Amino acid sequence: MSLFEWNFLDPSQSTFVGAANYARLLNDPMFWNAFWNTIQFVAMTVPLILVVSMVLALGLNKELKGSRILQFIYFSPYVLTVSVVGIIWLQMFAQNGIGTLLLGWLFDGSPLNSKFWAMPVIVVTTVWWQSGFYFAVLLAARQNVPSRLYEAARLDGAGPWRMFWDITLPHMKNAVLFVLVASTIFQFQIFGQPYIMTKGGPAGNTQTLVLYLYQLGFETRDLGFGAAVGYTLLAILVGVSILNYVIVGTNNE
Image (cartoon, rainbow, N blue to C red):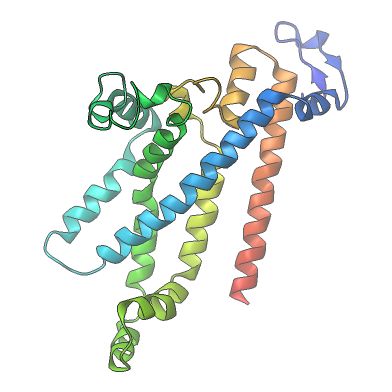
C-alpha cells in the first residue's frame, strides 16, 4: 500500500507511485515534527520510568508493615486502560482542574494548552501509569539477589551506595535491560495519551508518530502515505529490537 496513491473509495483505481510516498515523507515537516516529538517523549519518559521503578523496588523490598499495601497501590495504575488514564489526567489539568489550580504559579491556565508544559504533563501521566509494571519486574529481580552477599558486604564495611553498585545493580542487570528496551519500544508507540489529552496540540507540540499515522489513516484518508509512515515506524522498532538483542547478547557472554 505504501507504494500506491491509495483510493479509499475504490481501491482498484489506486495508482502505483513507487517510492514517491517515502520521498514525500523525507520532505514532510509534519512527519519530522512527529518524529522529534516522539524522540523527545521517549528520551524523557524511559529514564524517569527506570528511576521511579528502581526507587520503588528498592524502597519496598523489605518486609515492613504496610509494604504489601504500598506495592498494590503503586502497581494499580497499570491495570487502568489508556482511555481512563487520559481522562483522569485531562480532568486534573483542565482549566479548572485540581492540578492546574495547585500548580497555577508555574503556568498561565491549563498546562495542556502550553507549548512548553503539554509534553511534560503527558510524560508524567505515562510514568504514573506504567511505572507499576516495571516496578514489579525490578522488585522480583531485587528479591532474587542472595541476602548472604549483603551480609558479607556489611562485614567488609560496605555502605548502602557501595552495595547498590557492586551487588544490587549487577544482579539486576537483565531486569534493568528489559525495562529499558521494553519501555523504549512501548513509548515509541505512544498514541492514547496525546490523542485524549491534547489531540496533538498545541500547535503540533505533542503530535507523535502513531498519532500522525492515525490522522493520515482515519482523518485525511491518505492511506498510501500513512502506510509509508507506518512502515518507517516499524523499521525504527525493529532497529530498537536488534539493538536490544546485541546489547543483551553482549552482556550475557
